[in-house]
Image (cartoon, rainbow, N blue to C red; front, top):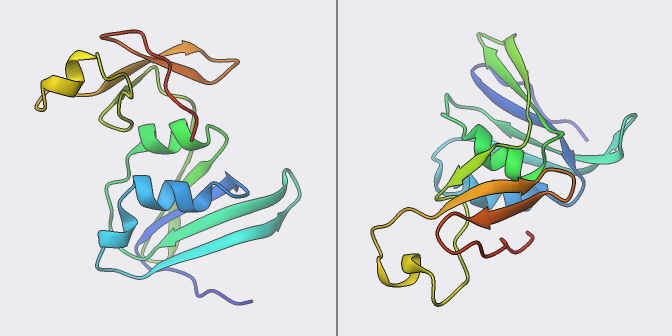
Length: 140
């Protein structure tokens, strides 16, 4: 398989196998009017298998979304065909409007304009809780 290199854009690499499509949808890449390549189950020396997303456009990527889906991923920023920056992603302490609270009694259920805010409750378990009602976020 051959996927061309990109001139100006972003490569999200080392995504856990099977998480690429979740990340694709959470980042809203389906609405992007630019070439996007999704590689799934690529061979990885570190992980065995991995997913890769290549975005051939300047794109403001939400690092919190990537950190929530897969804190082990890396983001490579490409400019003029050259690697400008490589960022290692970690779990964010706070998520705003990335996931929604599922508790029907939470204030976010009736106050539509209120942000859905989750805080990292347990890093080892990758557990986030709603700041309003303490409901545990459901896993991806």
